[in-house]
Image (cartoon, rainbow over all chains, first blue to last red; front, side):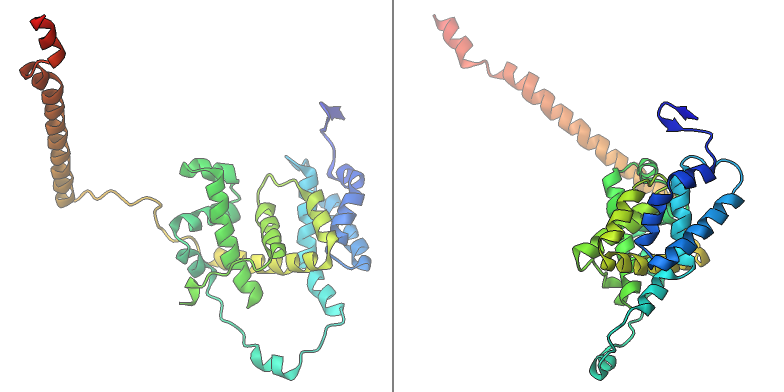
Amino acid sequence: MVDDGQWVDESLSDVFLRHRPALRAFLRGRCAQHDVDDLLQDLWVETQRTSGPVAPDPLSHLYRAAHRLVLERGRGASRRDRRTSRPLPEMEHMLIVPRPVPPAPETLRTLGIRAEHVFRRYRQDGASRPAIAEELGIGTGLVEMELGRAYAALLLSRMRA
Amino acid sequence: MMANMRPIPESPREEIALGWIMRLHDPAFDRWPELSEWLAEDEENSDLFDRLCIADRAVAAELQDAPAPRRRLWPERDDTPAARARRSGERMWIASAALVFLVTILFVLVILPSMHPVPAARSAELR
């Protein structure tokens, strides 16, 4: 049913079928070609299991589910493994020493109370950036800046370790 | 010491990937087609995104196990008698300073002009 240009009362399966090419494109950007069909199939099965409306945005729900499936099945990692990787010369092996990464709570503490609060509200509680800005009486730009600092400090150190 | 060495994005690609990861957690995020395009643009984009996603999941798991410390964003009000007396003293000083300021303004604007008539008025009187 179409109401003011928006689809309402549409089942998740309908949304899946209507946006299958876009979902496939999203998965193609994350996985090897032959994995895309498997994951689409998994997503379809998950869609069938979901009962009731998925408010407010069923398409976002599907994308999030696809994103989660990719991570859960470790497609990214397996894809990298399949690639012909250049063997490391012996000298490089000797130079690479695993760097210790401080625990996430400790890293957050060093960023300050506001950054920690903003990050936890956003990442753990699922609060939106404007909502956090309103709670703290600061601008959305400042919230984004704190989030940027926190994400960089937490993720880049782990990725490079 | 290690904790103070905060990593920063080393390339525009890293910065963009971090931006996507960050926005992805916004409950209102709806730029999926754009993200798909960026991921498909270059295999490096997709690889970097995957690695950051894995790191992000690790962070989420760590934080899940360590709840937020009970710290306040604003300092708690100290209500001990000594602090109350200190605050009262500070208020007295501010009130005294404000009073002195007002008296000075009053003196300069009202009393001082009446003690020295303006020269223009004097010359008018002479004529």
